[in-house]
Length: 187
Image 1 (cartoon, rainbow, N blue to C red):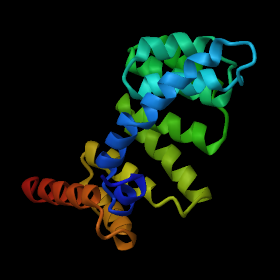
Image 2 (image 1 turned 120 degrees about the vertical axis):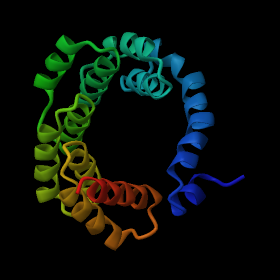
Image 3 (image 1 turned 180 degrees about the horizontal axis):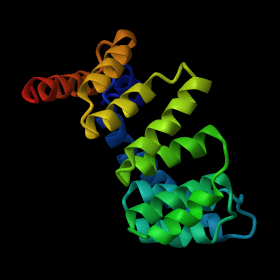
């Protein structure tokens, strides 16, 4: 059976996620219940909550995270859990608690995308890309936003920019073809 590095080298991210779901999350979930012990590291609870979130056990993730110290990871997790649970008021509460760290901003952009606030997501992606131009994957995120806003020509240019560096990306190739199809059929 291939290991995680094999999946990542082949850009098979679904395979990598499946492997992580089967192995790493199960290991974490079986070992992390010790987070309630007095001598447990403080961050153990939030790691368990993250595992529950990725397993789509949102209520359990919320209940565990509420008992954890309010670190930036906890705030990001709680904002995403609130999004999954359709709790608009809590999304806004956690949104106002986010800092200026790149992780916080990217989490905010992801939530904006999921809420169909594409312009807000693009603004965040643009500012992060300006400060970290090596994060080429953000071109794909922005292309998805532009494609949703029905600007296929902008999305096309962003995907082409990404494909110059990663020509074998199946997701980017599929997105490029989708954008081209939309461009052709809209004329």
